[in-house]
Length: 238
Image (cartoon, rainbow, N blue to C red; front, side, top):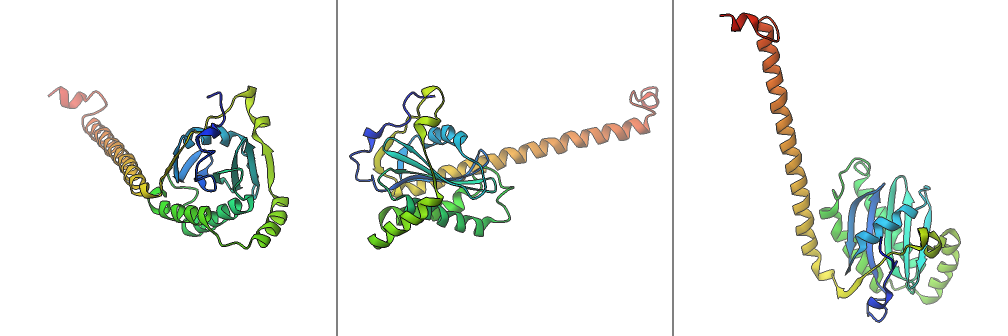
């Protein structure tokens, strides 16, 4: 594990400080779909942070670390997770996650708990991209109403300092590029589609091999029955 949980200098002066950097939907430890506006080592961060998740239905929690916040909602084995700068509205972050949660569960309710990893990447990625852009750039909240909502909402959100949660002083190392990736969504589509196609191709090959083996076994059993036993005494004596 890297010795630095985050490298804030990489984005501290960035124009993207008010954006949602990364969002992911996870079932247990399996990523179902993910999206990022900016390049970064988000998979490494997620691998290390998700061991700290409190998996209680309905929980809303924020991990604070230096200039960053890791927000998540957990519900019935599904975790909705995002990374923002600490200056980003906590209320807006959780409203974003609630929006994603509502859309995802209404669309895939019957497949949530049986789908393969990344099964929804191609279908749900555009929704993540649109909602991430919408909440990152402008929600047209009235500032006074936003403050009032923050005061009410944060009462139900648990916040922890991630420094206290890391084991043996180990830290994550988050590297975020300044390049906006909203124009790179098509690349993510191609990569994910290729991975999914490869997965199903291998699964199909394994199934065919299993059928061939089963067929050979059945032929052997039939021949053995006709020839008087597994050593085929009737057939070999002729």
